[in-house]
Image 1 (tube, one colour):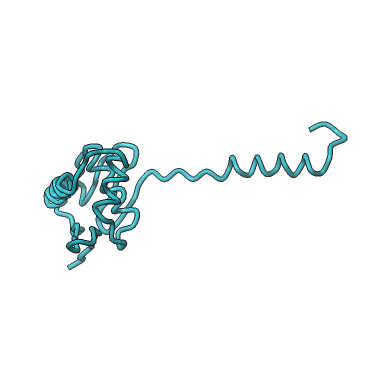
Image 2 (cartoon, helix red, strand yellow):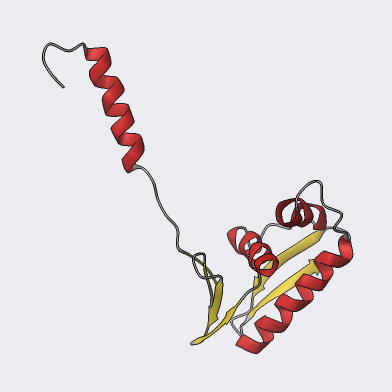
Length: 127
């Protein structure tokens, strides 16, 4: 900035600079013994990893961001397939089944629990 300058312009420029520096990039989400890589769509556990398909990845990401909060089938359909899709409850159930099989393959202590007619959430059993 060249002199003379107004204090309002200085404050405006400082605000712009602080916004640029405030970006936080999250690369991995962790819950229990699971680590989900956001850049590679890999789910890791106990030294093993498996690549998730796009919809599997999106569902697991939603569940891992809020593992204790129930996520309904409607929320999953809207978030993963989109508001105007023709996906139905069976689509969600199929992808949850795929994810459960992958968790078994990884020998994870994290399970996907369902409360009928309400939604899904993650549970970690350290026993």
